[in-house]
Length: 111
Image 1 (cartoon, rainbow, N blue to C red):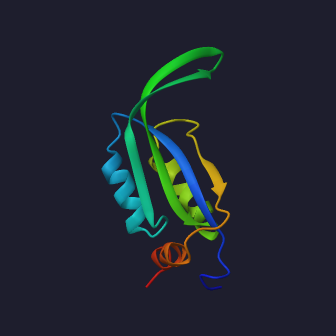
Image 2: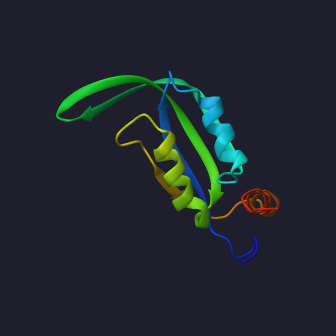
């Protein structure tokens, strides 16, 4: 497979504010599981958990990668995540700048 045959995805998760999100993001990029990880500013989340409405201060984490890296990325996110059921949403990318997509492909491959 090469960059023209790869399928690209954006993966979303959230982490609580007490998580060292910089180390979290650095590890995913260092392991070539994501080409880029964006960490958004703190936000307020409202959700239902175990029958109760909860609130939490969290950060949204956006990861750009190839579909063939998703399963390993999922394993790493779950291993590093403090939540029993962390958000892990995989959104397909339907097109994009070819040079950017090729960069994602290159950065998620072993040299």
